Image 1 (cartoon, chains in turn purple, yellow):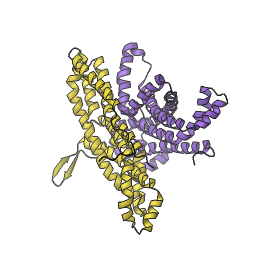
Image 2 (tube, chains in turn orange, green):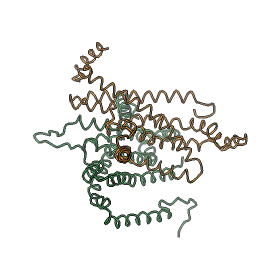
Image 3 (cartoon, helix red, strand yellow):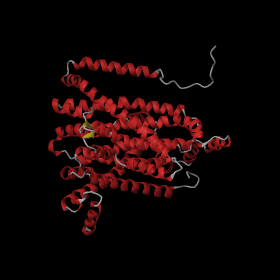
Image 4 (cartoon, helix red, strand yellow):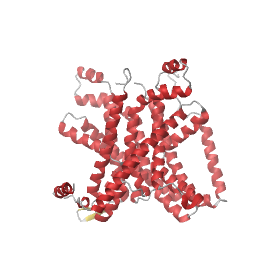
Length: 244
Length: 262
């Protein structure tokens, strides 16, 4: 492993790129820790955002004004304000109020706040995609199912959502790729993700370009993985007669 | 003599909004009235010119970024459509790289990789941070505009190409007089959407030390150092961005409905 790394450092030095930090055990460890944090962040927010999205979509399409109204307001506010401002509102305002209320026993770390904020933010986008998918389910299908004595919850879970998921899948995958890229804002509140680790390294060794190439490659790999999983899911869930 | 049209267009500004507008103005007047009695609102009123100046910086960055991004994006988009492989491949690479990179990473990239001043001849020209952030936002903007352009061209039915070619139009003529005039209409809604997203992206400028609205809010919150004021100033950031982006998004939706003819 180290042998390969040294060969790579030598090879890149030929282009004038200084990748010496990869040989340094401490700096490499920071970067690996950052990459793992970003991965964990992505996995947790993907699950969280999908749950939030399904919840919000169910509220939006419930047909009850007292449920759909607040959900609509939440979605519009989330879609029309920057993620960073939402993160600050949560971390600097809500967290401050929480700390003042319970003191040092505040259970929420910066990492937890990032997971919550990004989950809710992307959840709003998922909800819009799912709502469009739910509205695309033909009414005759719903009527047929309700004539078979499905109740409202069964209709949603066994008929409407499985179909809506297939309609909304391309948009959802798009949102998830966006989500992977969005996790970089975690560095704004000092969560040690890969961007933060890179900032720590380049303030010491002044090798911004090299680290940028590394980070861009890392995020490219992550979004490529999400894209591949999405395509596999699309092919897996494809039903004859729907989509192409 | 007026000619009655059978097509009734939806009103751009339906009457029902006037009540909401009056309500909002009433709330604002109430806020200004009560501001004289509450220390928190008084401080907010005191800081509001600074906030407005900061938000002006955000808007300036967003306008310059979408402007330069659109010019570059149309160029890249034209290259993507080029029949020459030598032009097509670099353009495709450009679009793929800058669409898939996190915006924050691109902003860090332009901020730290570019020098802080440029030497032209014997004079040094300063290269301030906000210009670098503008460039950092213009890069993904150009990639997205290129995709919007490509999508608009692809959405024109191929039968129009064939019909035009059978009328002896050349490739350039088809583009100029048949395809492009239709594309601008189709590009407008996604382009405005992109503008709203870029405006929200300017919030990231504060992370590299540009004195924008968020930086101002942080300074204000640290200076006044009151719990109530911190809550109010961050909420007012949300309100500011919402007030700027929501009308754009509503207008985009209206245009989408208006142009939904295909």
